Image 1: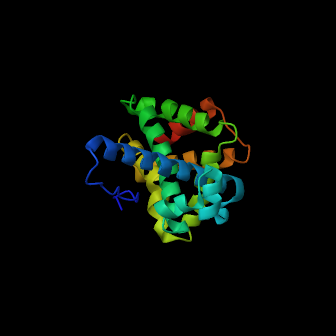
Image 2: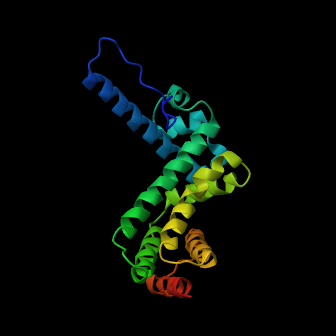
Image 3: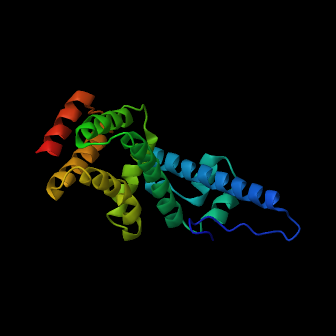
Length: 201
Protein backbone atom coordinates (compact mmCIF):
# COMPACT_ATOMS: atom_id res chain seq x y z
CA UNK A 1 0.00 0.00 0.00
CA UNK A 2 1.13 3.58 -0.58
CA UNK A 3 1.04 6.22 2.17
CA UNK A 4 -2.41 7.45 1.06
CA UNK A 5 -3.93 3.99 1.21
CA UNK A 6 -3.86 3.31 -2.51
CA UNK A 7 -2.49 -0.07 -3.54
CA UNK A 8 1.12 -0.09 -4.59
CA UNK A 9 1.69 -0.54 -8.29
CA UNK A 10 3.48 -3.82 -8.99
CA UNK A 11 6.42 -3.06 -11.23
CA UNK A 12 6.73 -5.32 -14.24
CA UNK A 13 10.45 -6.00 -14.76
CA UNK A 14 9.89 -5.62 -18.48
CA UNK A 15 7.89 -2.41 -18.22
CA UNK A 16 9.45 0.96 -18.85
CA UNK A 17 8.90 4.08 -16.69
CA UNK A 18 6.15 5.42 -18.95
CA UNK A 19 4.14 2.20 -18.67
CA UNK A 20 4.48 2.11 -14.88
CA UNK A 21 3.52 5.78 -14.57
CA UNK A 22 0.50 5.16 -16.80
CA UNK A 23 -0.67 2.33 -14.60
CA UNK A 24 -0.23 4.43 -11.50
CA UNK A 25 -2.19 7.34 -13.00
CA UNK A 26 -4.97 4.98 -14.04
CA UNK A 27 -5.09 3.50 -10.54
CA UNK A 28 -5.31 6.93 -8.95
CA UNK A 29 -8.14 7.93 -11.29
CA UNK A 30 -10.03 4.73 -10.49
CA UNK A 31 -9.57 5.25 -6.76
CA UNK A 32 -10.83 8.86 -6.96
CA UNK A 33 -13.84 7.71 -8.98
CA UNK A 34 -14.67 5.14 -6.31
CA UNK A 35 -14.46 7.76 -3.57
CA UNK A 36 -16.71 10.11 -5.52
CA UNK A 37 -19.15 7.23 -5.90
CA UNK A 38 -18.96 6.59 -2.15
CA UNK A 39 -19.82 10.25 -1.47
CA UNK A 40 -22.78 9.92 -3.83
CA UNK A 41 -24.04 6.85 -1.95
CA UNK A 42 -23.60 8.62 1.40
CA UNK A 43 -25.44 11.74 0.26
CA UNK A 44 -28.28 9.71 -1.25
CA UNK A 45 -28.75 6.89 1.24
CA UNK A 46 -26.58 7.63 4.28
CA UNK A 47 -23.26 6.29 5.45
CA UNK A 48 -24.85 3.03 6.55
CA UNK A 49 -25.56 2.20 2.91
CA UNK A 50 -21.87 2.18 1.97
CA UNK A 51 -20.69 -1.29 0.98
CA UNK A 52 -18.18 -2.51 -1.55
CA UNK A 53 -21.07 -3.49 -3.79
CA UNK A 54 -23.03 -0.20 -3.52
CA UNK A 55 -19.96 1.90 -4.21
CA UNK A 56 -18.96 -0.23 -7.18
CA UNK A 57 -22.50 0.02 -8.58
CA UNK A 58 -22.50 3.82 -8.22
CA UNK A 59 -19.14 4.00 -9.96
CA UNK A 60 -20.20 1.59 -12.69
CA UNK A 61 -17.27 -0.76 -12.10
CA UNK A 62 -16.99 -4.42 -11.05
CA UNK A 63 -17.44 -5.25 -7.38
CA UNK A 64 -13.85 -6.51 -7.26
CA UNK A 65 -12.56 -2.97 -7.87
CA UNK A 66 -13.55 -1.67 -4.45
CA UNK A 67 -12.11 -4.72 -2.72
CA UNK A 68 -8.83 -4.12 -4.56
CA UNK A 69 -8.50 -0.51 -3.40
CA UNK A 70 -10.16 -0.72 0.02
CA UNK A 71 -9.91 -3.63 2.44
CA UNK A 72 -13.12 -2.79 4.30
CA UNK A 73 -15.98 -0.32 4.55
CA UNK A 74 -14.16 1.68 7.23
CA UNK A 75 -11.33 2.25 4.77
CA UNK A 76 -13.82 3.61 2.25
CA UNK A 77 -15.42 5.91 4.81
CA UNK A 78 -12.14 7.34 6.07
CA UNK A 79 -10.87 7.91 2.53
CA UNK A 80 -14.19 9.47 1.43
CA UNK A 81 -14.22 11.83 4.40
CA UNK A 82 -10.64 12.81 3.70
CA UNK A 83 -11.47 13.49 0.03
CA UNK A 84 -14.53 15.57 0.90
CA UNK A 85 -12.60 17.58 3.46
CA UNK A 86 -9.67 18.09 1.09
CA UNK A 87 -11.95 19.63 -1.52
CA UNK A 88 -13.07 22.22 0.99
CA UNK A 89 -9.49 22.74 2.16
CA UNK A 90 -8.35 23.37 -1.40
CA UNK A 91 -11.17 25.85 -2.01
CA UNK A 92 -10.53 27.56 1.32
CA UNK A 93 -6.84 27.96 0.50
CA UNK A 94 -7.68 29.38 -2.92
CA UNK A 95 -10.13 31.90 -1.49
CA UNK A 96 -7.86 33.05 1.32
CA UNK A 97 -4.66 33.16 -0.71
CA UNK A 98 -5.43 36.77 -1.65
CA UNK A 99 -6.23 37.83 1.94
CA UNK A 100 -3.31 39.77 3.33
CA UNK A 101 -4.84 41.38 6.40
CA UNK A 102 -7.67 40.91 8.87
CA UNK A 103 -9.90 43.41 7.09
CA UNK A 104 -10.12 41.21 4.01
CA UNK A 105 -10.86 38.00 5.88
CA UNK A 106 -14.56 38.53 6.61
CA UNK A 107 -15.68 39.38 3.04
CA UNK A 108 -13.54 36.62 1.50
CA UNK A 109 -14.79 34.00 3.93
CA UNK A 110 -18.41 35.13 3.68
CA UNK A 111 -18.33 34.94 -0.10
CA UNK A 112 -16.85 31.44 -0.02
CA UNK A 113 -19.35 30.10 2.50
CA UNK A 114 -22.40 31.51 0.74
CA UNK A 115 -21.04 30.17 -2.53
CA UNK A 116 -20.79 26.68 -1.03
CA UNK A 117 -24.22 26.74 0.62
CA UNK A 118 -26.07 27.81 -2.51
CA UNK A 119 -24.78 25.02 -4.74
CA UNK A 120 -27.97 23.14 -5.78
CA UNK A 121 -28.13 19.62 -4.43
CA UNK A 122 -24.76 19.89 -2.72
CA UNK A 123 -24.13 16.19 -2.27
CA UNK A 124 -20.57 16.79 -1.16
CA UNK A 125 -21.67 18.88 1.80
CA UNK A 126 -24.36 16.40 2.79
CA UNK A 127 -21.92 13.52 2.62
CA UNK A 128 -19.30 15.37 4.64
CA UNK A 129 -21.71 16.09 7.48
CA UNK A 130 -22.99 12.54 7.43
CA UNK A 131 -19.44 11.36 7.93
CA UNK A 132 -18.82 14.10 10.47
CA UNK A 133 -21.58 12.66 12.64
CA UNK A 134 -20.11 9.20 12.27
CA UNK A 135 -16.80 10.52 13.57
CA UNK A 136 -18.46 11.28 16.90
CA UNK A 137 -18.88 7.53 17.39
CA UNK A 138 -15.85 6.29 15.50
CA UNK A 139 -12.56 7.85 16.69
CA UNK A 140 -10.65 6.77 13.58
CA UNK A 141 -12.71 9.23 11.53
CA UNK A 142 -12.10 12.22 13.83
CA UNK A 143 -8.78 13.51 12.38
CA UNK A 144 -10.20 13.67 8.86
CA UNK A 145 -13.47 15.21 10.10
CA UNK A 146 -11.66 17.96 12.00
CA UNK A 147 -9.07 18.79 9.34
CA UNK A 148 -11.19 21.48 7.66
CA UNK A 149 -12.16 23.19 10.92
CA UNK A 150 -8.55 23.04 12.11
CA UNK A 151 -7.33 24.67 8.90
CA UNK A 152 -9.95 27.40 9.18
CA UNK A 153 -8.93 28.02 12.80
CA UNK A 154 -5.29 28.31 11.73
CA UNK A 155 -6.16 30.91 9.09
CA UNK A 156 -8.33 32.96 11.44
CA UNK A 157 -5.68 32.66 14.14
CA UNK A 158 -3.23 34.50 11.91
CA UNK A 159 -5.38 37.61 12.32
CA UNK A 160 -7.07 37.10 15.71
CA UNK A 161 -5.22 36.46 18.97
CA UNK A 162 -8.24 35.55 21.12
CA UNK A 163 -8.75 31.75 20.92
CA UNK A 164 -12.38 32.15 21.94
CA UNK A 165 -13.11 34.39 18.97
CA UNK A 166 -11.28 32.02 16.64
CA UNK A 167 -13.49 29.15 17.73
CA UNK A 168 -16.57 31.36 17.44
CA UNK A 169 -15.75 32.08 13.79
CA UNK A 170 -15.32 28.37 13.08
CA UNK A 171 -18.60 27.59 14.80
CA UNK A 172 -20.41 30.32 12.85
CA UNK A 173 -19.13 29.04 9.51
CA UNK A 174 -19.91 25.40 10.26
CA UNK A 175 -23.34 26.25 11.66
CA UNK A 176 -24.16 28.35 8.61
CA UNK A 177 -23.27 25.49 6.28
CA UNK A 178 -25.18 22.96 8.34
CA UNK A 179 -28.36 25.06 8.36
CA UNK A 180 -28.01 25.66 4.62
CA UNK A 181 -28.51 21.92 4.11
CA UNK A 182 -32.00 22.41 5.55
CA UNK A 183 -32.74 25.32 3.26
CA UNK A 184 -31.94 28.12 5.70
CA UNK A 185 -29.43 30.18 3.73
CA UNK A 186 -27.93 33.59 4.50
CA UNK A 187 -26.62 36.47 2.42
CA UNK A 188 -23.02 37.42 1.90
CA UNK A 189 -23.63 40.78 3.59
CA UNK A 190 -25.29 39.31 6.68
CA UNK A 191 -22.58 36.71 7.12
CA UNK A 192 -19.83 39.25 6.49
CA UNK A 193 -21.32 41.52 9.15
CA UNK A 194 -21.47 38.66 11.67
CA UNK A 195 -17.90 37.62 10.89
CA UNK A 196 -16.71 41.21 11.19
CA UNK A 197 -18.15 41.46 14.69
CA UNK A 198 -16.41 38.26 15.75
CA UNK A 199 -13.11 39.10 14.10
CA UNK A 200 -12.89 42.64 15.44
CA UNK A 201 -14.45 41.98 18.84
